[in-house]
Length: 426
Image (cartoon, rainbow, N blue to C red; front, side, top):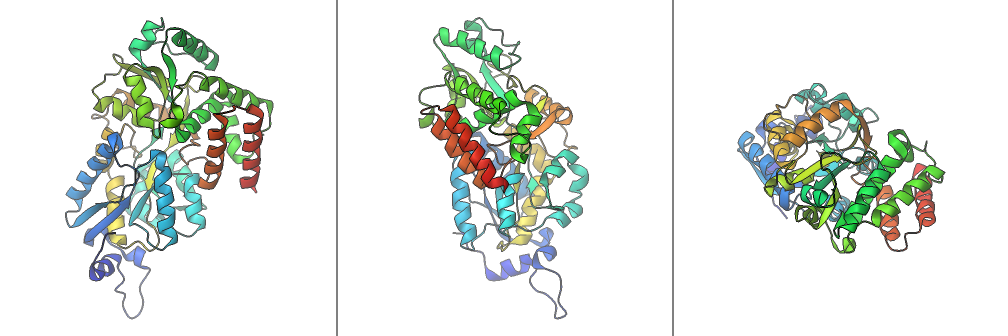
């Protein structure tokens, strides 16, 4: 556990109020006067994600030389392990200065528990309401308030494919399938060639594949309706979607449940042991850092059936109530929301900036295309990455999806999903 001197914590937090009484400590906290350490909790513990964090910390160190970054990262795909540790720390009254969370519904549980400071005034001071696109601001706003600052925008409906494997199966890498039926037909050809068609890993990556199949089958309106109650989980259309998911699983690697995180599944595509991987665009950073070239070694395209739709998530950071160094927290939030911070971080992470005024010169081919797509596509919220539903709903549905991988009972998964939705819609 990090230790911050009492004097530094109090001064940084702005708790030295006058006798006549000032405003709250968080409102008074001034990042330009911050000193001491800033404990930031993430799940970016290794690989390309750690490279992105390191790039962001470099900017933070330049902008705030009087502060020390305290890396509190906990490893685990999509933050599953980290979120459990964080929940325990928050419950015990031991919050970090800032923690990573997915923008959107995932924040609702923290808000309901009164664990987050309202950052609306910070947005005004930093002029973020002008810097971030309205679609993003709408997804960040809860009852007129904003509780997190996004460092990026990720896309969850992307297929990454090995060029050589596709060509060996007689497929054109530059002509991706238009819908699920065409994709399944292509995967039949790959299977006949002796290569695993579709790489996937453990539970959360299977949930991401599941959401992509739901989106491809139901369309953006039908998919979004699953979370707001306008789409009936018991409908024939959802039955079809789960049948499609069952078929997709039939093309996957047999060891999927033993792969705990996304990296090994993406590596199967890099190595030519699998043709496709449905993964967020953090995979782009891995391909780039491993020296692979787009168009030559790998290609990417929206999950078949989802072209024109951007399945959105954003890594964002909070200011927890009771943070030891709120002035330091604001300094961190200032860095991650700055042009320099977003440029450095996203260039390394594979994602795109949340700000609309970040120069794209240093970004790769994929990121430039994603920037264009986010500005023109229909945007939906990711299930697997906390944008569509609160954590408790996601956890229960993830368990149901994980169990499905064994018996693959379509009716059982549909009934479970419907019951879970009914429970949390109340």
